Length: 199
Length: 199
DNA sequence: TTTAATATTAACCAAATGGTTAAACCAATT
DNA sequence: AATTGGTTTAACCATTTGGTTAATATTAAA
Image (cartoon, rainbow over all chains, first blue to last red; front, side):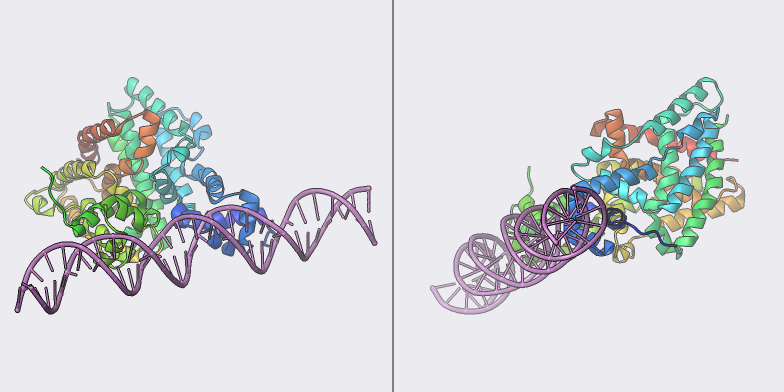
């Protein structure tokens, strides 16, 4: 069963595919129009300009990179439980949209990226940091540096996706094999987290 | 004392600055010519095409992302020592060229990146992997998954640079403060490595 | 000093690119 | 049937872009 899409939806879908894969500079309005099977003028009719269309896509997709899992985290008591949940949810999420990390990194590192950076939801990072500070105070986990640890946690989860083309090439992984490897990574990272944090 | 550069050197220097900051798609030949204070035709006179010039820059700069520190590693016996050396050297190196990680990630994740991926020197990763396997065999370190650990090690070192614009924005770090934070990170990462690896 | 090779410049070019426009189309209202 | 409003199209436009060319300047060899 295929859902009939209206023109605006067709554009958004096509724009996502083109922008996410090629970045802003590497994307062409004509390519988006072709992909959506519509006239190029429609892009401007619905979204005014390339920049406006890109911003719309970025705002939508960035939520996959800074996921909303705080609601579920609130119910968990310790930082370790929260970290576990984060790793699990995050890797599963990115596995569904493996190009999003690159898309975000690409966008925020360009000149004039200030506009996009300001749009990022950073409450997740803050709530993780707060929980980490609290548990250190309580002596539940080792006296590590919260900010440095959070950076490590994010890096261990997201970095492999940014390096995926290299890993795939040098170990001859296909998409599925790489994805499976990341699922296995969840358990391994949970071990690392315990080794680092538990006294 | 300023060294007098010939035209070819001026081009290479300007091309590096433009390409590294803006990526291939975001860079303009005219911008490189302006930066080098030369006529745009000189770019083609010396390097034929934009692609050729970019490949030249990539080959040179990529060595900063896959550094040659194997010669020094060879003299170290355990994987832990090698990992220590890697973290130390790597973070110091990237601190001098903080945009290189983005440049590499940007390049290898684009469509048609196969050409560039094939140029990457991967012997460092292999030698680290081999040393890790060996030490696990000997029982010197815990029974972790070598490939997953190496990915973590790389991610913990390089990922912060890719997220730097976000961290700088949300914590109001300037370049120096961020750089200092990464230097402090070296000691912290060495601790994490021990927590994870030592039985 | 002539000659030949290399280096540099300004002007030019075709293709691509983001964006616009005016006319046509189409569905719903009157 | 005529009107109205939103939607779609083809053709068009100005600018930018990577790249070329032919003429000129510079250097070094003969």
